[in-house]
Length: 238
Image (cartoon, rainbow, N blue to C red; front, side, top):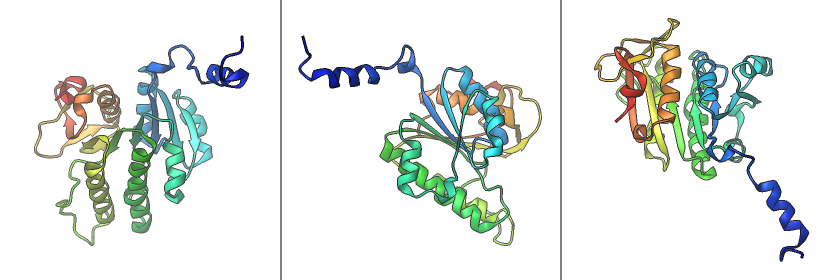
């Protein structure tokens, strides 16, 4: 007998049914997918069973991203308006912002680190991607104390504004504030109690990204950290 909806609806139903296992898979959109921290985080997130889409600006970087197990997506978030950003985020459960204009041109720094970041948060709210992880830095905030004539000033201002917007947004957000980044091998150990910025291996920042996504006790918190003596999973647990 025909189902009440006719052939059409049953066919749609079959297409919509998730393949085995996908209901547990978290879909993560990582913006800034070719950054040094991002390339270290991607394999950890893939190993944890997540589906990772890594947004990159330069198509030449696709192979590097694919090698991590993540799916590269070429898009220039700086130029995306709210609707494009919402389409980008749509269908994901988690947004990780690990992009940075890398200092230099102040105009581009504000356009990426402040404006595009804020649009991505608004897009996450609109698209229902509730979990948002921001990679900021240890001293970020309105009282960053970076002088205006310092080349780092625009970045400090941009990050302060973005972090502020995220704290006020209707999202399950975690702000990560690592200290000075090093190329050292990761130790898997951090210190989240330190009052002063030290340094931390990029590999351990990647480890912290993976750990906070796995731990909902990190929602609503800003986690400042150096390398230290406490295993990452334990150190980030509230």
